[in-house]
Length: 149
Image 1 (cartoon, rainbow, N blue to C red):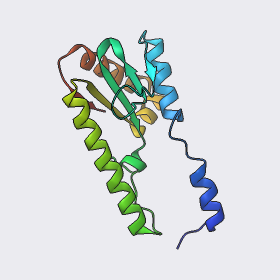
Image 2 (image 1 turned 180 degrees about the vertical axis):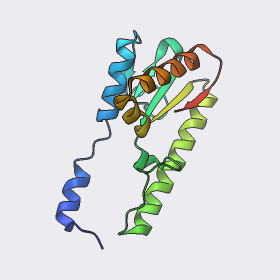
Image 3 (image 1 turned 180 degrees about the horizontal axis):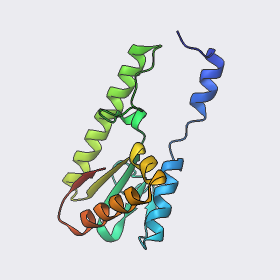
């Protein structure tokens, strides 16, 4: 049983944004401060990545753990109401993410997925932030095609 009325739930769900989310904006600011220049939601790149680094031919997706089902993450819980609806929704999201990843790979575009919980850790702890940024810098310089942090 949902603790919110259908009207309240609808209002909450309508307020969820797909672009310019807080984790995405925070991560973009970090990249910009490090000297990286990018385009946003590029329609020329499969999956319309949140961030595209043309110089590095890299698509960056800042995924919400809940919506994209980050395995083992506390934020990727299953709602108690309308379980069948949510299962279908989450399966479609994960499948779409996989298809986009394959399209990027076929086009030779590197893919970086940054999870919402990682961004939260970066906000809380400067040492974690530096560690992840160093890992990303190394990824951009290597010939590796995929990284998930």
